[in-house]
Each structure stands twice: as C-alpha cells, then as structure tokens.
Length: 62
Image: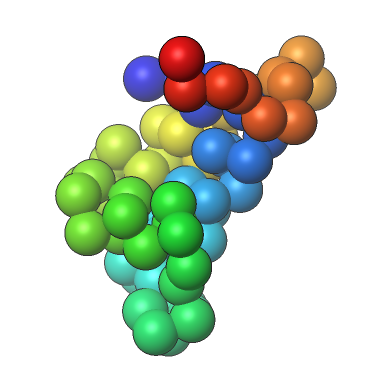
C-alpha cells in the first residue's frame, strides 16, 4: 500500500528506522509512533518507499 502524502511517508520512514533499531522508539511522535505500534516492518517499507514526487504534503482524513 503506497503512502498517500509526504507526511505519511516521512512518518513511515521514522517508524521503520525505529523498528530496525536505527533510532530510539522514544523519539517517535504522533503518526510515526502509531505506525510503529500497529504496522509490520514490511508494511512500513511499502509506505516509506513510495515515490514522493507526486504526493501532496498532507491529506485530510475526511
């Protein structure tokens, strides 16, 4: 599943970094912390690897 915004992609990248032990889990905030808790490493890889050139900065959750 690809990321829907640059913000979502960035949060997934931060969560993925923590899953891999590259950053501290305690440093995660907001969506990144939620993603870390609820998504697998594979799911986070899919979100983080989305081509961000055509993504909006943020998406409304309507």
